[in-house]
Image (cartoon, rainbow over all chains, first blue to last red; front, side):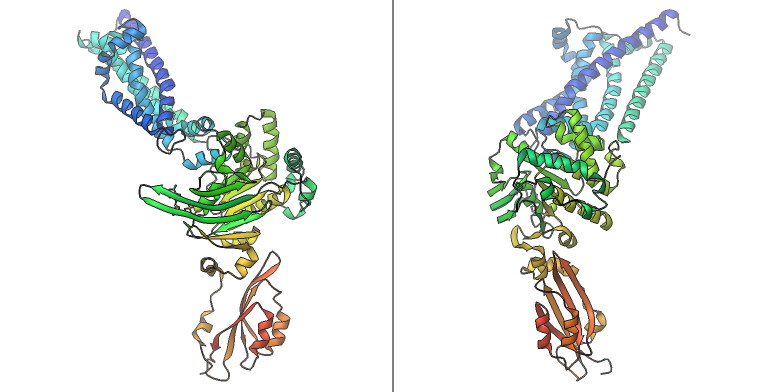
Amino acid sequence: MFTTQMIDRLWQAFFDTLPMVSVSAGIAVLAGIPLAVFLVTSGPGGIFAAPRLNRVAGTLVNGFRAVPFIVLLVALIPFTRLVTGTTIGVWAAIVPLAVSATPFFARIAEVSLREVDPGLIEAAQSIGCRRWHIIRHVLLPEALPGIVGGLTITVVTMIGASAMAGAVGAGGLGDVAIRYGYQRFDTNVMLAVIVILVALVCLVQFAGDTVVRRLRAR
Amino acid sequence: MDRQVTGQSAAFGQARVFGAGAAEAVSAPAAVPATAAATGARSAGTVRFEGVGKTYRAAAGEVRALDGIDLDIRAGEIFGIIGRSGAGKSSLLRTINRLESPTEGRVLVDGEDVARLDEGGLVGLRRRIGMIFQHFNLLSAKTVRANVGLPLLVAGVPAAEIATRVDEVLALVGLEGKGDSYPGRLSGGQKQRVGIARALISRPEILLCDEATSALDPETTLSILNLLRDINRRLGLTIVLITHEMSVIREICQRVLVLDRGRIAEEGPVWQVFGAPKAEATRALLRPLQQALPEDIAARLGGARRSLRDGTLVELSFAGAGPADLGALAQAAGAGLALVSAAVDRIQGHAVGRILVVVAPDARIENLSALADATRVLGYVHDTDD
Ligand SMILES: Nc1ncnc2c1ncn2[C@@H]1O[C@H](COP(=O)(O)OP(=O)(O)O)[C@@H](O)[C@H]1O
Ligand SMILES: [Mg+2]
């Protein structure tokens, strides 16, 4: 069905997609969680209340969320070149992926953080927690199941987006599907890519769900 | 009051007690060794309110939650705050550790104006004031140990010391062996014990309780109240507690404040306030506790005597001045004395409550009046044969 050459190519593509998704997911977590914490704590009545900055950040996040990924991909090309020195390949795809995933993930994490019972924050204040302690010992741990659930959604979305990045020359599974499946009418390759993507998504979802279940079981 | 030791030595005294009497902490509060003297308790733990007012400004408008509160809470006492829902109880309590800031007046803890503290000072103040909550407010992601140890962890206490102190305080509240559980696995009573342990681990001078037993069943409520009383005696710390249950006040408080729409309705020793309530707000709160007149008697009750056989229904109120002397009552009333209902409680060594009796038509009511703090003829019970 497949030549060994094609199997190599798919294998290679798979190993391009993995770092694309995982590195940009890592960046999304590192940048998105502080952003989410800021969005929650800087609101009116929050422990770091700064309503004006809060509104600016909220608007910025909404702006990035409003731009479709494929547009962002193109629009960010100068920025990508600045950061990575190139506009093609895995590393060049990571920049727009991370930029799009960060506000996406931050909004989901924000919802979980907002759901933390205000009574817990009050209790923490009453035992002499400083604001930083409240973030570290109350907000983040209590919201963790929701944050992990949100990360799962983010990664699944990014797997899809990474296939799109492939279409503009980033490599990865999307690239193979377009070049061989679409441009050369090789249906088998197309199907193989779909199967791999579906398997990957299922695996991520399963892993995420398992972690969330463990966390919630406490 | 010969307790004058402060600071280090008081803390040390506590440490000793935490370890020593741990086993009987819950089961036998009565067997606990005499406290203040044994531990060298502190003189700190006073709260003074001076003209405290609080207005909440929300989008929906202004709410006047507290108005002109002048009040002194003494070191080492158990002070109760009652009032109907929305009276301002929580607002008042929360000004003590500045979870809420008054809009007028001052709150002084051990003479220190809490409004003047910077963040560091506020954190220090809160470490001297423990607080427990109706819904416990435990961190679900942390074990019991981690919840209880958190106040020390954030205060930078070394891990080894945290571990020993967590053990001590868990023993004090009767939760040995539960340290590694998550709060989600505990019963309501156990959760509140964790809350108490967390509040006590910093060795506070004051413990604030906001409806701490309101989510618990009556039996668990009693065990938590016993624990609070025990802690108060052993550690000599001041307890300020809010409740809407009169029985809680009667059970453990020495003095009580009745709040009504943000103002002080009345304040005083529990036996006095409950025995002879002066404010309408207090009477309204106490009313559910009073037994209603039995229906058959109510049906036969009239304002005037109809026949010579009509007995007189008399209410004897006891407000704590003397004992409810039944022998003397029987003697004064003579033959034909019938007890209708009696609800006399002993609060802080004072007989408080009321007795309803029907006395024979020819009994001399004047003779009864010396036996109680107030005597009142409620009416005449008509004979069924009429
Ligand atoms: N954060 C707040 N914002 C606006 N109004 C409040 C707030 N907290 C309490 N109140 C109002 O203040 C009054 C007193 O509330 P509270 O102190 O909680 O009473 P209690 O504890 O006696 O039930 C109530 O009318 C309540 O609605
Ligand atoms: Mg309240």
